[in-house]
Length: 378
Image (tube, rainbow, N blue to C red):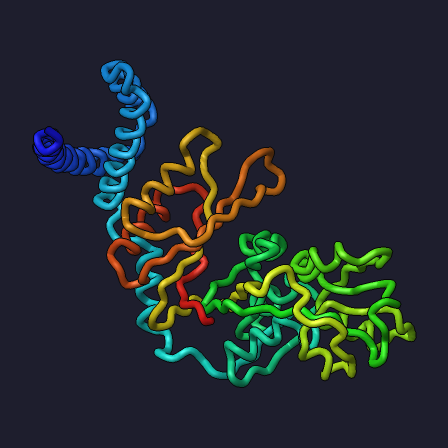
């Protein structure tokens, strides 16, 4: 019996495909009419009336039919936009970047990093560039500013951690500054507790570290009694503070490299909550550079404040077979309950599906911005 039902489904699906093709052909003719008469692609009143009629006709399947026809109309608008707009400014920019970027990622450059020698950003920089002239700055925003102003060719900032989550400050800076991501690095992080040589663990009264490192070592810190936790700008700065202090009862959550760098000793090793503790760093540039093998893309956009707005974009990404690696939402400053949505996508920059998605987002999605396409190192 089920074989008969499946044959019925196959027959209906074949009819649906034929009708879909016929509908898109008519949609193409409508696009030509709109071009000749200078009419916009989107007709909200027409779409609302159509959805109401279809929902009424579908009866108890009204909700499902609304989702189906919302998607169909979305595809129709995309098809019409392609007919009307023609070439995509963004796609042309991406093609030019692919053609004009060097085939090998640079081995040396002037790079901005937050913190001081021994910081995790510096370690990430050394993994991305074999020979870097590092300019240390005091904040993540200073990194972006150094790149924007041309003081540095590149900048390194942390974006997210597998234990503590996203670095919200970095996400907030993404939409504020003019830059592109050209490379990312997924680096394993091992936190250690550094003290002055000879200091006893039982006598520690205060621990310095960066907020992210503190979050990543929360279980260890909860086990301590009567110990003050002090947040500072960077894990390397925390180590330097211990080294310069005249106290023997202070410690820093930092890296093992900082022990040698600042004349300290490792009092406790591997104090992070899990051994599977990774931080993603991004390398940013003022110029759009797309190197061979780029298979990740970062974008941001906002949506209309109505049900289904985000779903419509995500369903479009899914329909093109593009994988969403990361989705992060951040509130839009000055607007109540409105958000920016940051996406990391997995797709070859050379694929037709990727090009189609960039075209559709560029022309149809509010506040869309392309941050670049790149590969990730491990």
